[in-house]
Length: 440
Image (cartoon, rainbow, N blue to C red; front, side, top):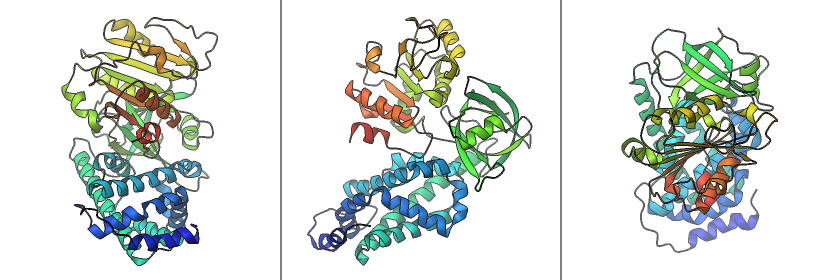
């Protein structure tokens, strides 16, 4: 709960003069109020979103079936929601527009979770209720934030419906869940297993773009709630099946269930492919500037989306630098494939690998075909001479744990790489890695 002085400041701020120009999406009065009250919402921080989720789940416990309970427990979802609200409000204040490009990834996640318009009404009710509970604001403040949320919800509903229709229109596309049977299951490393799923109805499945993911819906025996998880699709689209690679995480509820319990022949529910890792500001260069260099940076199971993207361009003439970090060779999926690619593609493909704790049979080397090259965590200073730093159109795609992505973003920035050249994929709730790591 904010202090009495902070709550009283809301009223005083409303009396202060403002010269803010009218935004195109909301009224001038609303923009003024939101601008004046944003610091107080920021003061509440993740306390705001934590209170919101407790409030909403108490009123609608069925929504626990579409939220990742691990992310809730670790506070990731709360942080992501607060960042989205703050970024949307800030964008409205500064430009009069929502951050449409940033929201595109959220639309994809909402479609993957099969969100429907009525759920946005529930969220709005409890966001406003949380404002009342924690801030006790004057009516003008509540009405302003209600208008802001209305604009945001409308954007999300329209954006999601657009994506739903695009996927449904594809051959083999669908909306909602579809039954798939596990056809094959095989180990890729000590902790990573590959799963191949075929549709139970025997019909075609829609194509996907490199870097996109599917969503599995599971509920093991004794689980209180059903759990969705997003997994990057690997391999090339074939209309017949989908393949994913899953790392067994320590205390991972769903990953452990998939590794230990799910067997060939079992039927699971899946959502259609979504995800915009391949988009952002890099899409034009990716599709049209086929001679521009690309750098892929990954850690752990974050290798899967970058590997999928590599597969789509491995026959092009562009220069590719592949950088990966793993615990050791036992925890390095697809190593044989990448070493083989390095042997076959002697020009234009360079790979470098870091092992934090190499095993005795992990032989360190310097060449492209070496099992690994550097000991420790990924340090881009080790490969500064290989990075296309002088190429302003070079693109950098990275994926892995949040700490890894924050480190990569900061290191690239220190080396002079512009944020517009960076794209990343977060497996959990949408994160603002670039802004958090290298500032605005």
